[in-house]
Amino acid sequence: QVQLVESGGGLVQPGGSLRLSCAASGFSFSDNWMDWVRQAPGKGLEWVSDINTDGSGKYYIDSVKGRFTISRDNAKNTLYLQMNSLRPEDTAVYYCANVGLSYWGQGTQITVSS
Image (cartoon, rainbow, N blue to C red; front, side, top):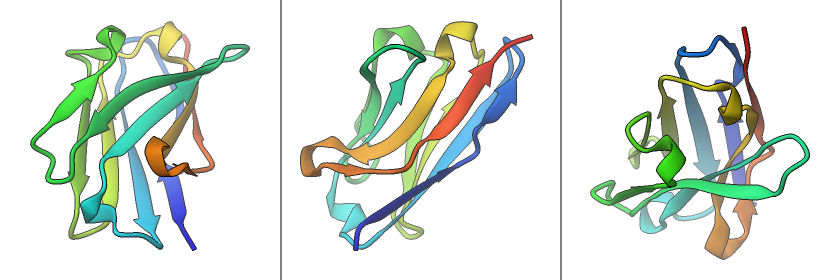
């Protein structure tokens, strides 16, 4: 069955960095675009970024452009999100997903606070 397992979340101070990883299995990872989606406390789901199959195309919501970098390693079936210059408003549960196929991970909590 399809599994998306995120790791790398935690508590970080404003201005800090974190790197999220997502290990994928049960489907053809290298043939699919992948997404990062987040949900802040009390708010709805917000698409953050996606990446095409070979990693040459990367797209971001305006609020994270220049701070977050999405990448993938198809040999390892792993998706990444490098998050720099974190802000309190980045606090959310971050999900690895293929939104089109309705594949979702369990989510990992990112809290940005001093």
